[in-house]
Length: 93
Image 1 (cartoon, rainbow, N blue to C red):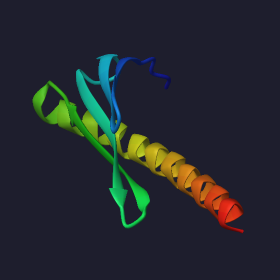
Image 2: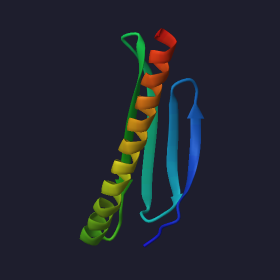
Image 3: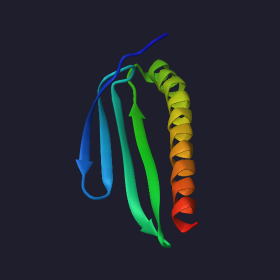
């Protein structure tokens, strides 16, 4: 199964990027990525919410969509962290 999504993206300088689902497999999705200073470094926080209709069936579908998406975001953030740490080591080295 393939789903096509359309999202709006809002850049809120200097520390936040927000995404809102316009078209996709569920009726409501909001996601945010926020940056903050943390002990001499930068912390990146991800947050999101998903909403569905059709009661129990919608809740089941939202859960089915959310799990793989959360894994996708986690893998992306892990890769970003690894690259950022690699670059920091090169600068310090």
